[in-house]
Image 1 (tube, helix red, strand yellow):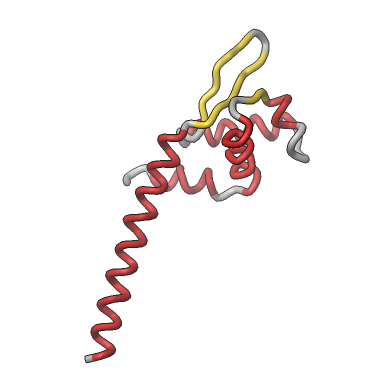
Image 2: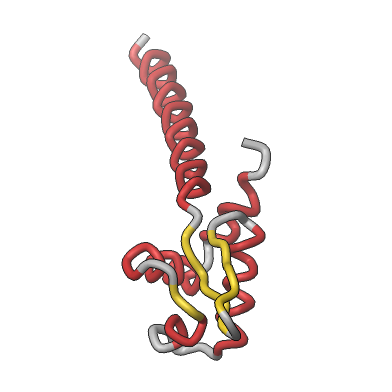
Length: 103
């Protein structure tokens, strides 16, 4: 997975992770609605949402004067696939080490 770094960098921040959880549980929300769930300014939330958007984790659309943010589940699936592959590689490496140590 060639673009894993921006994806995991976006997921590595507690506020951004919280935004994803909020969008997962509540569905599409405006920044105004999201800001009621976090102790940061609307401007800071918008910056976090922009990072998530650049990583492909959320998308937005305009409805009147508001921007509606929603989860992009495909990218979470990409993260899951990458982590599963990494887990298999570690399991194989540990099995090789165990075999070596037991011989």
